[in-house]
Length: 359
Image (cartoon, rainbow, N blue to C red; front, top):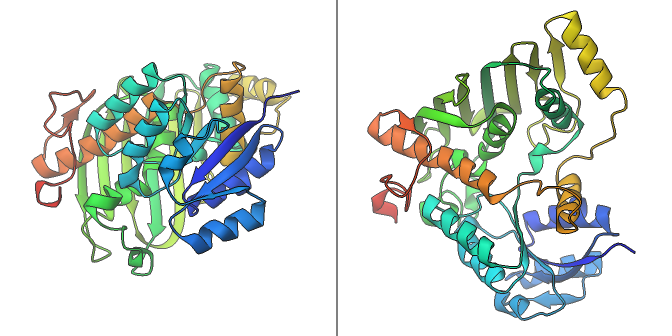
């Protein structure tokens, strides 16, 4: 009989998607034992809807539950760091929504605590999963794509005053950033997941769409460790909403599906450069096994990792890479300088990318 891990979901906003997509679809692997939310109505509605036994207002109560295996943190960003650290100290496995924490110093502290804890940590990057992106990943990992040349990432979404009417949104202290942090972080993770590590970045951020503290437009030029080049563009002022990643390699060009919130699900456009590459791709994908998108596969692979059956699907190192991009963007935009990677304790924004007047 497979082990069923017990879960507490903290925060019923995006946490509901975790339940619907990640846990209800993997009932042979997980049981949601508790829902923790300050909003009593939302807490009770979720508990009633999914038959969740425990309704908790105080996060600390979860830490003392001996029969609780996993704490899934789905709270506003400013709460992630203390909750993740506390859960790891309590020996729990931890899942945490993006952004994992609010600085490179905090992510390094989390990684240090993770090494001491008996619990394992999995940050959330659910857009990595689905048939489209996983086929692209398989082609690249098999060496068929060849040398990477260039790539583009476009995150063209729409957010208006109604979105920012939620009190913690659009503010540095609570959201920790704007489109770069809370929206484009997903496609930028896809880019590095497929293309590799960044060597340097020159970026700009601007606030042009909404009356908020944080940015809602960004653009950057990047150089990869491999020598390949890339460009990132994002806005929250688009008339329609798409996520588009296009990657040109030596033997194949790959373009993502454009669906904004699930770009990995549908099959991607795979354009082989020659007949040899086409034939190799056909052989590789001939017996393809379905990869459900988003949280369903990420949670399933997390279970595999806990059971020693596979690698962790997303790691704290992946999260650090994403937060390096964020840090470099803000620093480059302010200084008008190219930022070299990796970013360590000597970097002036290692402890915070938040502007001094908002800390």
